[in-house]
Length: 449
Image 1 (cartoon, one colour):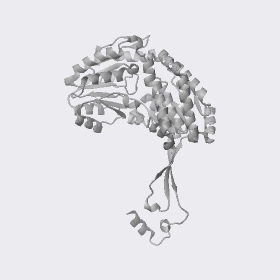
Image 2: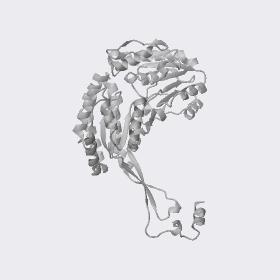
Image 3: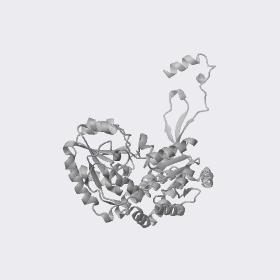
Image 4: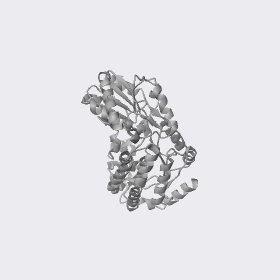
């Protein structure tokens, strides 16, 4: 791994990754190779996570195609040096901002969307002119092997390489001095990544998680709220970092919302044969322990050996229950109530800042109050999850839920250092800045006023 890093640094210093033409060619070749392997990608996602073809395309493959399309269309403008204003005190000079790649980036990808969450940051790294080492998750070994096959077919390893392995491999990579680290995963592991990066003062982008609430106000369109919460929560068997982690519903509409959610669970995810699986038996065992919290009002059945847990609703959950102490990351949805919007805001703010927040309300004053008073990474009003698929919206967390953003232009920015340069004239020289100018301090003070 150390030799691989040295090889990539040598290649980066040659400057081949810096031109627009080079970057566009790499992104085009990557898209063409993904198209070639599209069915294999779908089959692998089915085998490891039991994803349907529809879910595999909409949440993994299609998003990657759109990211490439969006970035290649705009990359030329993003790469141009930007001239910015220069104050009068700098008379004769011009000021510019030059975007430049960090160098060699380490991308550590998770298992829940093992194709998309490896490829999306890689697209940003390539667009910004970086070399990259991609470390896929060991929990989806067949997808990791497929990623290595695809990447090695498109790129030489001195430019982009995949390194497979477990926690020990990740730790060895983190011990090396990369120029940038992009990590997607849990908060505890994110802290390990940041601590390792701190040893070398390496900049990081951390896409983490947290307990993302769905607030349902008394004014909400209850039927649509139920449908959209169910869709966003139980997509990929709840193994989505921005899935609604819990519902906070106004007491007056609680039972109506529960009844509607039950109906939509049956409509959207009632077919066990097409429903996604939990990634490992160990993860399934962890989730099953949460079923003792509160009262199961829908679902609750499971098959640990098959890694299947039925979409489940839990009522009478308290803030002290185990399920409310950590991110769930599975198909179990706790339901809690509030009496006033102020109470709901206070409850959410008692936790760490969530990666996402979803508010269902027809009241614009309530919408504005929640947006102003709750800090979160991103989210939706009257919907769930779909904000992540808009490349015009930077995606990322805040505080414990992450550092930095990506998607679209934000992906280019995540792997870019913006270098400030002032170009000074040599046609004349203003003597005022020099200490031997008569009454220099008086003139400087007057000028700066």
